[in-house]
Length: 95
Image 1 (tube, rainbow, N blue to C red):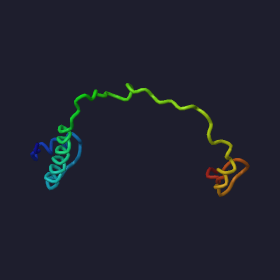
Image 2 (image 1 turned 180 degrees about the vertical axis):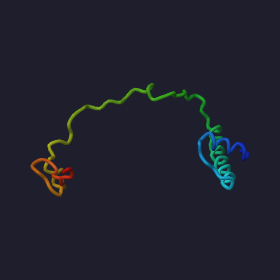
Image 3 (image 1 turned 90 degrees about the vertical axis):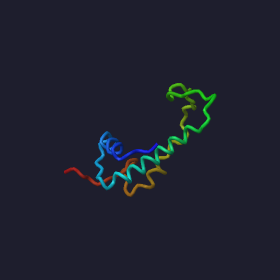
Image 4 (image 1 turned 45 degrees about the vertical axis):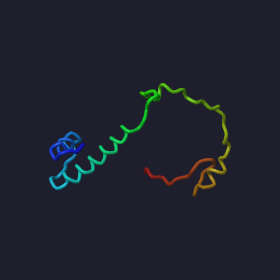
């Protein structure tokens, strides 16, 4: 499928993209390349594959909700340039 300049301008208008007359040919070539890639999808054999309309049809895998890395305050705060007790200390920015 090849897009003519009028169709390229209409697509640009629908997408609310300002395209100068000099850029219409380049945009048309890009759009034609994209449509060519989409046409390649027609060659894929999807027989026997059930259509998927969304992720809600899939069962969610659950993992146990356990704490695996806690009690690391000293390790985390060791990277702080300044600290006040168990908190990061930052300069006052509001007078």
